[in-house]
Every structure is written in structure tokens, then in C-alpha cells.
Length: 402
Image (cartoon, rainbow, N blue to C red; front, side, top):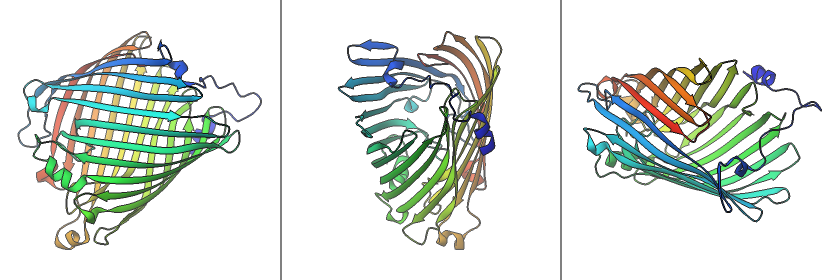
């Protein structure tokens, strides 16, 4: 993989092409209103049929579903500083199961002030959504997440930057309409402190070598047994869209240490890969994610998630394209030492997803598509986890680059 990345980026020399991306992100905005720059978009997705709305193994329920959501990316200069952010709203529609309908919002805001060698920033985000949180939770339960982060970018040299920041996060489940919400709240509601450091070294105009280091202290509201400190270090590469291979490739290690010895620690590999390779009319996008996630199960408080996916997009003409995708997720649970002594091996879940679709583009920002996805879950805990289903729907996207 490293050889491929090195080959994808031309060596730094006097012949390097100039960086064509704008230095000021506000220049990419489609509309201007005084000092405000913004790019609106709207998506109508998954308008079709879900054959297993509740991911039920024994009595699957079918419904007509859909999701509609406007959004806007915004930028505004105030002196030398820059405000940037995104506001989005989504409405989930279910024809028969009205209690599954919901309004969701995801919002973020950042303020940065470029100085001589320092660029201090403060940023925050707010999520209020009724959705399936991760791969473990099969019900749609309302979850709220808040994050505030303060940091600075330090230009050590023209090619080397150091980004330091600290953050405070809140994650909480609160849904009076869901019977699972109380269990999730009791086991997963928590505060977290995060300290981050990122070292960035620009190898070429298209490729940056970086090292991400992160320390997290999770403290739970209702179950102090789960309190954990963890540290991860992930070196890798970041490639711009005009490179032969674009995206991010990060691979490293995490040390995950629960404060109570009744829960075994995790020391192992983690990864975050989202890379795209384009050759003529074919685009291949690979995704690999590996990390530790908290579980709501009392006897199995966390699992190692390995998430691998591949998407192949083939342009038939300038306007028409065909998409084929496949993915697999492995949830490898870790049980408490007490549970290990009392029962069989910890739970292992496997999820497989296969799908495809066809799309029609009109210009650079409008796309019509029809997609279908078949999904299947199998588990060593068959009574709780086995199910399968099919989701087929149409989508309309306007305002986003296609």
C-alpha cells in the first residue's frame, strides 16, 4: 500500500504543478450575500421499500420509506478570521410505522484566526438524530451528541505543520418512544475529554504524510465500570483529489485501558482508510475501518469493529453511470472476566451488504439514481442477531458536486 501511495504522488521538484485548490475555502461558494458565502444543497434519498424496517429475524415488517434533507455550507470573513460551518436538516418518512418518522439535524461551526505562524481555532458540532447508532443497535433511537474543541495550527516550516487541540464531548440517548432507550442510556451515556496532536509534512503538492495521536478519557453516567482511558497513534498519508490515488490512509495502534480490571484491555491495530483510484471511466473507492466501539450489553461492554467496503462506479456516458458495492462488518465482542468464566465464547457478529444502482447526472450538481441493497446479519448469538432484508429506493441530489 505504501509503495502504491508513493507511486501515486509525483516527487517534489521544480517541475511540481502548482496547487490548483483555492487557498480560501470561501471561494468555492456558489452564492454570496454581503460578507456571507454559502452553497445550498438538497437530497431526497431512499424513496422506496424497506422489507425489514426493524431488522427482525422472525417477523420482518415492510414499509414505504424516504428521507428529505436540505443543507447549506457557509463561510464568512470577519477581518482576518474566517467562520465556516454546515447546517443540515433531514426528515425520515415511514408510511405505516408513523412512530419511526423523525426530524434529524447535524450542525457544525468553526472559527479560525490566521496569525503569523499560528492559526488558533475553536469549533463545535451538534447532532440530534433518531437513527441506528453504529452496526450493533438495530432500533432507531434518538441520540444527541455535542462537541466543543479548541486548538491551534502551528506552521513549523513551510512544509511542516503541527495541530494541537483539546475537546469535550457529550453523547446521550433520550427517546421516550423507544423501549431500548433506557438500556442504551444506562450503559452508553457518557462524557469524554479528548487531546489530539497531528503532525503534517507536505511531501508534494498532492501528498501529505501525517501522524495522528489521540488520547481519550471516557466517563459514563450510570455505569462507572465502563470508564476507560485510551491512546491511539496512526501514521499515514493524505492525497488530494487530483492525485492518482486520493483520500486518506491511516494505520496504527490503540491501547484501550478500562479502569476496572474486570474488563480486559485491548491493545491492537486500528485503521482508517478511505481511498479512491480513478482510471479512465472507472472509479474504485475502498474503505477500511478498524477500531474499538462500546456495546450496550452489560456482560460484553465493547467490541472491535472491522469494516471493509468496496464501491465500483463505471461511467457509461457523460451522464449515465452504474454503481456496484459490497461491504462486510465484523463485530468481535470482549466479555467481562466474570462472564467469560460463566459462559461460552464471546459473541461474534458478521454483517454482509451487497448492492448496486444506476444514476443519471445533469450538469455538475444534479443526479437521479435508483439503488438497491441486500443485507444479512449472522451471529453466534442467533436468538438476538440473525436477520436479513432488502432496501430499494430512488434518490435525487441537487447542489453537491457529482
